Image (cartoon, rainbow, N blue to C red; front, top):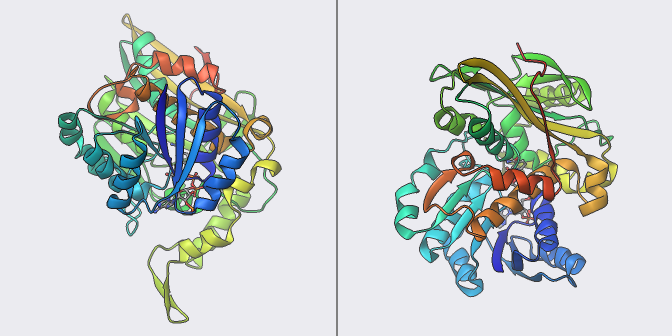
Length: 399
Ligand code: NDP
């Protein structure tokens, strides 16, 4: 039916590409373009033979001209950006120049400042609208499915939502004392930053890992979780009617936190370049290079993830609570696509988002966060493509 250009060929992209190939009725042709072409070729060799035609290309996604050349040659219906957040703007520029739809899973972050926010991408709204193309921002799990869950709760269960708690639990065990489940540089920048939550129209800032709660996760059991700043808080705070407070919690084990503290204390998580043997290096990038590659964790990881949202608000004048979540099993994901559940829970919604835009189910020229679209077809697709969701109307609440 259509063509997708997928940029990046790491952990998340690998799952999204497997899923595009399973969904060949929609993705009749894909081009995998990344910095290291050999990785694209290896994945193509694994997946060739199915109904989806696969080609590969080398691209430096920091370079707009190179991106434009690839888009003009391949003529995709949508570009799915699964490289790093640093490349969001160059890829959006190339989509504008070629009038091509755009989908990503993480908002822009300048490489030299560990601060992610939507303002840079929201500045493209008018230009995308005028060009008649759609940019769908944040089509992973969180952000992504958490925004779809919020839109679904608003549409079907509430007149107003006053409180949202997003709970991200990874109870997987990969057997390493310290490893990250997605790109180590991006992950460590996120978890070592100050926390924050949105309350009464303002950000309340916390020290990293200052707020801790224990939550009894369905199908997993009690886990320590910590309040983090997370990008969907920014858009949901604006897009969900009646919101008074929105928080994000993620679980971390003791070993992870102890190692992180130690690495911070010795300066290894810094993004300030230092001189080493006559060369400038960024300590965090060096650390990322010595840590296990997240795409190799698949065969070692056992256990489950549970990611979902608890909503509290009002329906027909009465108080109402609603919890919707997905439970995903690391070993099942590995059996299906050769990846662990963190890549899986991001790669599946990335494929679904690209499908929504490509089929025209979601077609709104401009730049939009995922909760601004009709959630129903996405919720149905989650059940079909491997991330079934469950709901509860009397969940345990987070104090
Ligand atoms: P990886 O590091 O595994 O993969 C990144 C890929 O991008 C690699 O193939 C890398 O190439 C490629 N790349 C990096 N820079 C460039 C460049 N300049 N030009 C071309 N290609 C480039 O990361 P993940 O797969 O773990 O994460 C991918 C994205 O998903 C990230 O933006 C991350 O923030 C996001 N994410 C979103 C989540 C969500 O729920 N919304 C959850 C987890 C991740 P090379 O192979 O040469 O290194």
